Image 1 (spheres, one colour):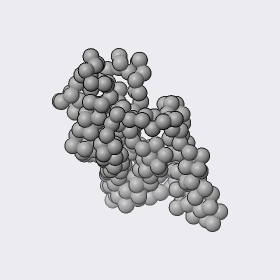
Image 2 (image 1 turned 120 degrees about the vertical axis):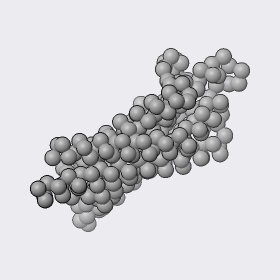
Image 3 (image 1 turned 90 degrees about the vertical axis):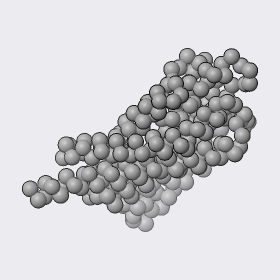
Image 4 (image 1 turned 180 degrees about the vertical axis):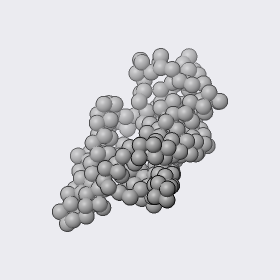
Length: 248
């Protein structure tokens, strides 16, 4: 069982990670690079340096929010150079993320007693995207460098609470599916958005609105592709191992 899980997760990580890394190279990464021109005021000595730290590197790793926001630590933070080095590190980190996502997904499916197949893996992957990407984006949309944002810890806490509430709500509504569980599940889905995400006092940004809007949609699509590929590939490879054991 453990061997099948590890093989399935490794296959999902490589296939989904490489596919997503390639997709990022033509979608989100160019937008991040463009946005960084607005992150440092024109003529600043740090204009070139800004392209190698903070939000750009975070964005390339599928962390859908700028975590630098002008902090002093971000000025000394290492990041890969543009070009081959950046593409390499982005690919490696995305493969690692894919492996981790697959491991969490298969573990959750096994604990829930779900039969692991391509179809069930795809369905659980789609649900994971809703919990980790779509639902949090209703309150905290993916942000480019230079965008205004609330304090980092507050955003992280709200994102984590929203992810947990959404995942539990989907499970209660779709898997348990009793009248009471459906009602509780729907309440959990709505609760984080009734409470509201933390936002800055003023929504100010040097980044053009068209660029930000394009980045939001592209980031969510990339996130969805990663999760659905992880779920379907992991489910397929795991089911192949199960079929081999059955015929042995």
